[in-house]
Image (cartoon, rainbow, N blue to C red; front, side, top):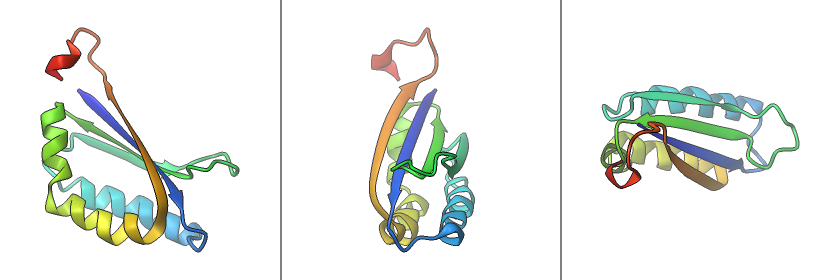
Amino acid sequence: MINHLLFFKLKPEVDDAGLEEMIRTSRSILLRIPEVLSIRSGRTIDPKSEWPFYIALEFESLNKKHIFEEDAYYLRFQKVIVNRMTLASYHMDYETDPSKDLKYS
């Protein structure tokens, strides 16, 4: 299993209502993608954090993650939410199966 973590810096004009919209929209749009096994999204509890919004996605494999990245729902999410409301993003991928060879992820 692959955990794909995304962290976002918000534009200054994004208020609490905008952040709530991002959380709800990320869950409703991205969960429609068949390759996504699970999704979590939310806001930081540290008010000084430079990455106040995050999304955690789970995929069966890196191949499924690559299919996800080309999906129309994901591209729509990027255009409607990410490009409109964020300044920067940072992502990391983790293999969660301890016995799996990383080259087969």
